[in-house]
Length: 229
Length: 242
Image (cartoon, rainbow over all chains, first blue to last red; front, side, top):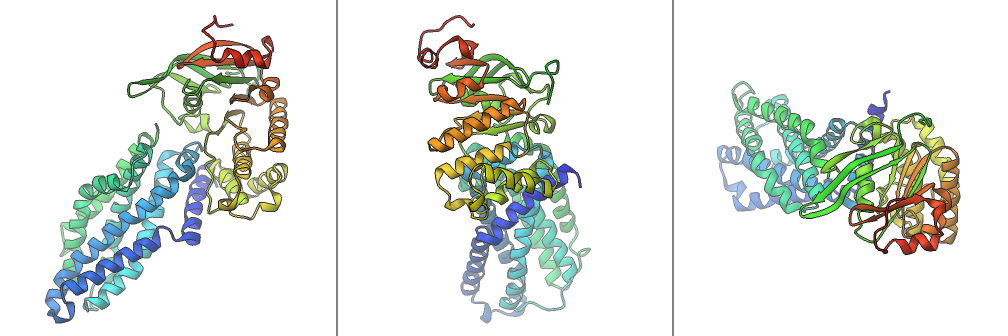
């Protein structure tokens, strides 16, 4: 195992331990997204709606919950890394900045996956969604869009941390840039819940994949500049 | 470690660093040979901490350049040879003392068993062996500072950049640190220390430099003045560089 791989795994291990021991990112993410689902359920009086209406509403509410919960998680991670200037501690290591970005992105993606493991089944139950959905396609869309959101949040989180600014700036910078990812997620999910496939959802899965590649490339290129004083 | 004919441990060439309208460093040029020691003195706001941050590659110079053993500290090859202790310990409070040191070993690419061996030895040395498996969040200020020092040394850096290393240490901790730094010097490591307590550090360094408003106002051999005279010189009018 090379030194760079060891360093990459060390960053992953430290963040994973923090999450397992404190739950400081995942717990608020879960709470926030569950409240969004609950409020939406009451606001739209779901039991009174026909199945077709529920199916039309579900993608938007699901992606609003995922997007804002991801933002909450990123903000928590940002605050945690800012404590005792841990960002600087990481910057002092010889770990390549692109690998540091990928390590932090992997953590963000892992948190999103953990959230979605709870959130998606709850959404299916609450909205009484059809079981005959292309779950493979749905998982692919969740991975692409969550990956894009995590990449964006990781890069912007680093900029905000270095500027010494708070969560408000994180939201202001992330949400507009996340719009293509969210629209792609909503439109693709809508098609899939209607019984379609990823191909039927075109071009939105391609938009999700394209934005993921773009944000990963931007993160890899800009992370070092974003972190240095 | 570089020999005497190798590149200097630290070389600052005309380093200027501005923060908006404030000039923290104004064209600082200085060199610390491999294995040598430098004490940096100066009043608050003189630019001492900024100088160390530029040397460590955390802050980018606005002009000029910093080199660590001939490599930019912004590159992994430069960073791997330096150990920096700042005003904060860079410790993860959800991790135990030992896990923090293992993390540092991992970040520097050490195999786990080697990192564990070094961590255990350092924990013993700093008197934290019995607290090795306690999360850092319950540590006192002095314990945190000792652990932060151990973290700085774990990967065996050839250049130590220490910003106020005595902060939070009790007399025993200060004595331990002085002894430790003497050993590091004897082992051939270069040392740059910023402190407001010059007395214990003066015997450990070859030269002293006083920064004033971002410039080297005075520099000379450590033995050229008494500790009190060096302390007095911090706020004195500018003298010619020795």
